[in-house]
Image (cartoon, rainbow, N blue to C red; front, side, top):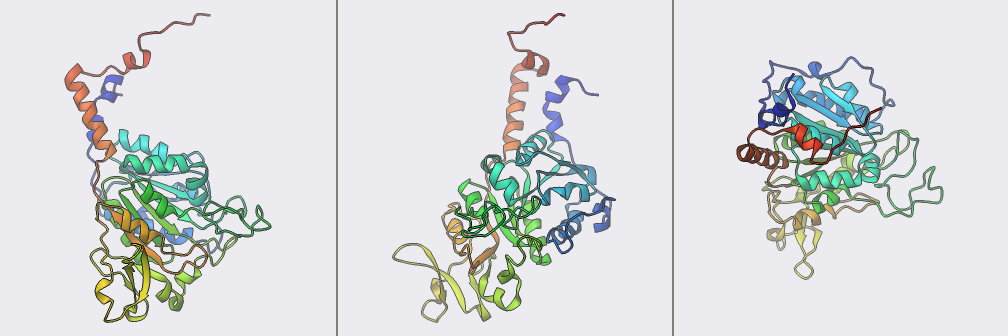
Length: 357
């Protein structure tokens, strides 16, 4: 068992993750019964994550899932890795401590729109701005499912629920816009039922150094069934979903008949029918642009009620200093300056006393 000085030393922060033997999806399935409602979108996300985990090439003990409270927060029970079902809204904070003290771990946060954006909103935005090396999967079903169907921070205005029988008065959060506004270095959106797209986004998030936020539109078939049907129905999706690919023109619709351009008068983005005259004005997606301006504008294209013109994919992926590395550098500098750290002295400080009796 290392002493307190050793725990403070930077060697702990430079542990090397163990490479795993060849693994399969089955290796990441736990022995716990999956207890979500039949038909819940969480099943699809769980299967995609379990299927993707072998790609990390890490031993299971070098992976950890941390969740808050909610339907999605059962996730750690179903992953055959380390995990923690933590406190309502506080998963990003707990994961921050874990990621900064154990850099050999791949740390994932699983949260929902209520857990992350209501009681946990403050914790989420600070994890994003710090750029801690963790991956946040935000399941958004636009409802409180675990507590039986109250409106959530992402429910549309006018939403009739058990807690808003005359319709919600609150303007909803756009999680992607919120993340970009908090200076997140990686922001993406995907859909539970699109396994291929979901896996590609998970892959990009895992490869990103720093905090990666992935919003996953997830269907709650009990309390908010069909909330994202326009994005899943093949005919409607062709006209509603904008699939973003870095370096590619932002085109969608039948045979790329629609595109996203910048209004020369206002600078805003708008959707147009593509013609020979305006084809050159169609934006080319740049996920790595230093400025978040265009990524934010893309996140605002979708109408909150109809979800038409909803971008999915990686909206932003930029390099920023990673909090864990910066902290490690400070600890190195302190050790070099003062010698071995004394955690006991740090905790006791200069003004201590003994209680007798």
